[in-house]
Image (cartoon, rainbow, N blue to C red; front, side, top):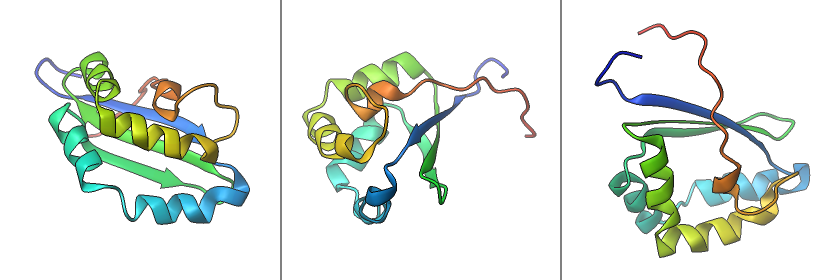
Length: 110
């Protein structure tokens, strides 16, 4: 990653098999205030991909990962969203956003 380029963040979580349909439905209707909070705290090009086995791959770009995560953690809308989303995940202690552990990027074709 060259100076001045956003950092690309990729992470994994696992959605419970019996909750996948509702998880998809909820993400088809993400609250507008949640979307705005993500934008305001530096999350860009944010995507979630869900595999048939429940493996969730998240990707976003940001100029400052720590600031983006801390900024969202400070919002009321994020606290409400995370509380609603927590029951959808396997092997998760705490809020889903606290489970974001960035993967190491080993290749990127620009």
